[in-house]
Image (cartoon, rainbow, N blue to C red):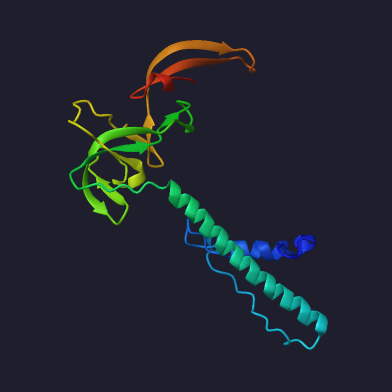
Length: 219
């Protein structure tokens, strides 16, 4: 812990407090606020020499010093993480009337009798027409009328369509899970029995509607 590495365990409660009471950029709230619905009562700032007891004065001053150090370190770490994230972000500008592909991660249902789902690799749907720009980095798309998706998406999920429009666009499946498309089986290509389970389990090789052959999977 900076200049006192041998005393790190003494400062764990303060480090935990500082982290849990600091606002996170992803939510705009501190973890404490998210759990309890309000911010905690702050630790009063201590002024050196307030206590007449030397041991108490020294202990409270050290606590105050460590809280300030932790606050600066957390702010520095947040700035570093933001800088790394900004390097990876792709801020692309589009115009109203452009056609773009929408990148989403489809889900497949693992059972016909249970609401269990698994993720597949992300893929592009569309192209869809841009109706308007929302804010600095989001766009509203003209999705099919049957789609239940919210039509506003971040620019990182969009890719500009080049050339003439295809007569057979990649359409979004009508069903969705947590605002992601839920795909349906197209055909059963094969079957096998797994004798390592008790009782033995039969698996089928499923071709999914609208997905590439490499997305075929045993279910």
